[in-house]
Image (cartoon, helix red, strand yellow):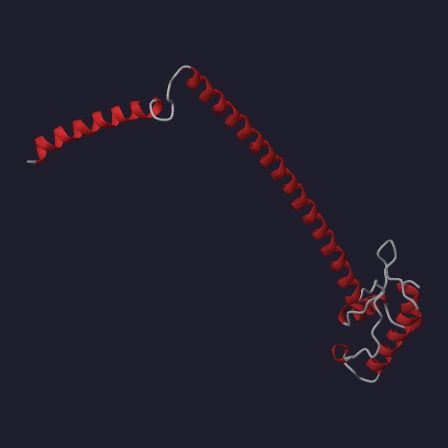
Length: 167
């Protein structure tokens, strides 16, 4: 029912009806145009309000005995817990996939490094063979003699300088 019909039924004006709804924070459905759409339960509540006002109760003091039941979808805690469990399961599965992918990537990298080490080791052996064929004792003569000469030369220069300035 619309506002004018309910107002005529109760014998009040539409503005009075709207004031009751606003002041008492009544939950009344609205139609697609935004107008109030009253049902039988709403009319019963409004009749109780009207009766209390006729008995001398102020509008602010009126207590509505039966509040209108919410028409929304109710969800229980159990439903939320089930959703949380499902999400946690999906997260764990995703984490497992990520870890598996990382392990495969690391394994591939290790295999590549091992093959590179093997290749370098073979190359070193080949170079050692070439040096041996040329008669060079690479383990004692080749790199270390040059380094010892340089180190000895640097050491001698230091000794000369320290002797001059140290005394």
